[in-house]
Length: 437
Image (cartoon, rainbow, N blue to C red; front, side, top):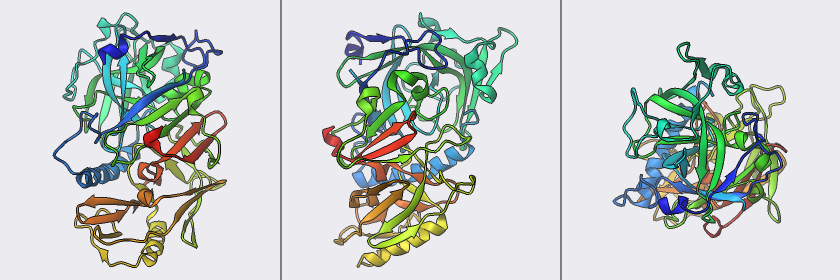
């Protein structure tokens, strides 16, 4: 990591974000970075004693827990390419914070907004393996005042210290985890796949001095990639034209990292690419899509409309950090019946009762073609997007019934180039061999 950041830094002053008053709106950025799955050998979470099936089983459990994390949601709310690692369904990115840059292994999360890390002095923090970020050691760090427009923009996520007029934040999650600290600005450096680190100045961050909950000691922060105003995507703004994309390698590809692309590197186009509208709702963090139906072979099953909008649009969120795809229980039951009736094999029970349609791994299964019919975009899944092996002798449908929140998860997205355009308000899909990207 040290040698990476000793390379010549591509220093950029970004003017496009509403938070960055001295940005250069004409500076256009394109880069790619590694996304490291939590079970990759490149991840600090990697356990060499686990089999691929055991890792998938663990990912399934984390996926179920993530719905709880969402349900209380945060109460607040060249071209560069970076690597992503998944922590419990989430992926990780190597970033650095401050001047001189301190390397941080952070969770890359399309389901949250704020970029935050644990900071010294830590009044009450969870244990982490890496050194804590010391704001006093960074020459570019500055706390933001209560009167700053950045603090005002955070609305109910921010509060004010009457002692020193410093803007503070509190984020709580559905699983009772939380982080509290100062709202600040500092230089964020992203490792790039072309070995030219990208330095982003005056990025708004949370410097957490009081953090607790289910956070792992192996990760030391979160990079919010959601749609809210303080996410990395929103802060980069016009400099990346609101575009980012990723290509997730199958979980069996242990020796290859996934990629996340920004700006000019993030365009998804050409043969096979399809696009669907991105729906804006009051919860700006989530990326909502409209799923119209799902086909299993020749059988088409209509998907329920969203109950919280007159149009019925925006009935499912797309999330890179959730392993399974979650459907409303009544719809899932109909989908499961259609899949089961198309597979000529004896069903086997999942002993942990997490997934409900399973078969013996030794049986040669003929899996029906499953197609997701999004508004204006038909996405046909490979069998590896639909079935996963969760033990040595068990393969199961990678979908689950859950009435809390409908989520299009990352198993269904693997080996697709998935592009988000927050300006044109579209999400695009293109089949790809992500290991070769």
